[in-house]
Length: 584
Image (tube, rainbow, N blue to C red; front, side, top):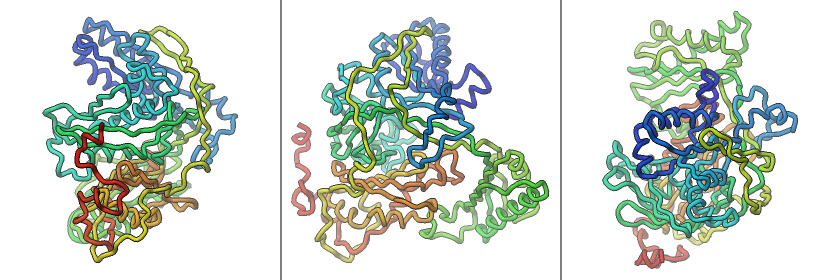
């Protein structure tokens, strides 16, 4: 959203994702009309009306008539003065309401989109809304689901959650990446959902990728905190007992989502200006490459600080030096150090743009006056850009005014139907380790050692400055051993070099028995997260891959237990021989 805000500052007609109009819609506009395809998109950014206007121009040029609806009301920037006076604090950190707000948008739900469809819209364009709402809304419209049918709303939201990141459900970023064919033509996911909320997830025939129980289980936990309390505007979902059954021909059958009433608030995501940043990236080759890169970084910083002192400028507010190629992100778990080629990652922040302009100029002298083997600065002179940090809070739904437009004309103010809401107190959440059918007691011991990758799949994602890592056992019989070894404390120790130096709980673990999984939430671990982080992995995308090297020792030969879950005493129930019987 921050990028779209910047775009609108340059051109008042922008502020939306132009590729939606020019790439996704324009070439296919006649086929969309001919086949009666309904389109729902949150490409409107901070200017959904402008996006709709641009699309209307495309339709006009093509001689096509489409009813284009717009949902507005998520943008709270017009109310910033009023909100500043209300004592609002960040929902996680308790930080006071910031100055220099850049954007502020509420995550809307499926209700307004479903209403637009009922008014005859062919295309619905929204600003900020939860991604899963774009799948839930047409299901509400098609099947007449009501906003108090929470299990159905949870099922539709799960369908949306699984496909909202495209090919991540069809083999993209899969742990067993080497088994996924034809990345160059990977198919995007398709959901076929019934009126009862049960659905099949598949992909177009003849495309690359892979749809399996494992690929979809990984995506189930992507960017999820507590799987028993997944908060959305329309429903609070419980995914802990979701079951995913593999079907022939790249398809899975998904059941078991449960729902509870939503809260009475929308989550609002804001960004604010907090200084400036610049990043220099340079390749260094030859012997002792790591030492040369480290000394180069020190010299550049020293030159800059000398200039700052002469001009009475304060020091950098933050510095991040990483030597990529030396397993820098692994910290104490790094193995390779004596590589002969590395990449220097030098990122800095400062409260004044002027100071970083000096930094940007002082990088170039490294090519002629410092270490041999510096092959060039990637992208040329580092660019100075604003640091935009996140600020999130809850805002009463009753205070929101959501409007619907149709073909550029105001149609109505959206009036949500009467539906129950609930208050969710943090202290009422389930305990960190929850209740599991696997007690972890009296497990047989042995002299075998397994890497986690031998026993499980992983996938990691981010939410602000927090990361999550989903761990799914490759076989249900492995889960008790994984759970016994991979505690919250063990994960905290494994990633200890990445956490902020703060008090409080750093890692939480949640059980997900339906898919034989665990979900870990790592707090304050991303160096600020997103565009506020100076790290080469600001969103924790590699965390799941890093955890695959975690060793589980002192266990018997677990490989002989695979596919014997039906009789193994450590599992509550076996895997039936006839999977179709289970589905029925």
